[in-house]
Image (cartoon, rainbow, N blue to C red):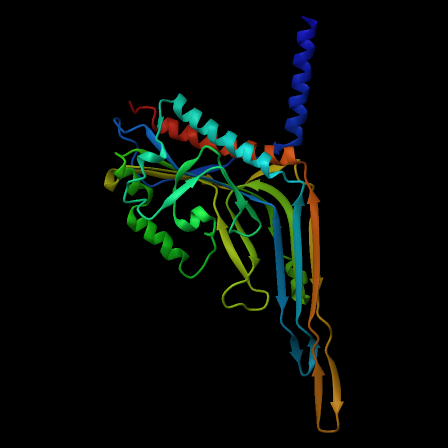
Length: 362
């Protein structure tokens, strides 16, 4: 009896230490439900069209200030770059945690009476007419800068050529809004649901990130200021990265909008069921990444004027560049567990909403 008590106490203490080392902040989720509640005879077949996970491992920030001149005096242009990355990340451990999240999602759905449809159920649909197979496991550098993209080993599905090859990003641009409108007009995943006998279509995305970019506004008044600091979270994220293609201005950056969401679609027309679950604020994860900040500041060299004869003055403007980069070491197990714990918390929250809505469906 004494031996059993000792084991229980040790297990409790171990759990307490683990919980203390990796604390999750308050979960604040919301569901944007723009459709009808499920019909009493709605199908409980589920096709998981997407399960995509993005994990941040590297970030850059840049700031540029043009030269400032007033009557031949001022400072030359200045550019500040800062870079922060993680060392010690084990991609294989991350893949294992993503696999675990996916397996538990399927198991939870099946335990509530839902039936999972395989990819063969959608391969001949018009919805995927121009798509190609996308099968896990996928572990690769994302087209979204600084992110690692992971797709579960057991995932089997279809996607556009760009999505399947990993060349499609979430970069904001002139036509990004039109793409969203086009998807809505075409019916989105409700169009797919209609083709597979009004089955439920789930589209799930998780984003774990840790960077906060942007320099001090006060310092930016006097020069170029780039700054990155750590704050590990699960949630939607707008990241920036130096612009490398197209028309580029000095210091220009692209913006990528990455979403953590749980999308459900079923049926079509006025009676369709459709909602999007998301986090109202990022879910913070403490005890994994040491609080770190990297900053670069550059005022630019003061102008220098030279008299040329007695006729005119030449002013020399020197352009300066400063760079600052740093790597932060992380425990590979803690980092992978952070992804699992935060992802599991969000998915379970969304499944509870789903199960409540389908509780009256027979």
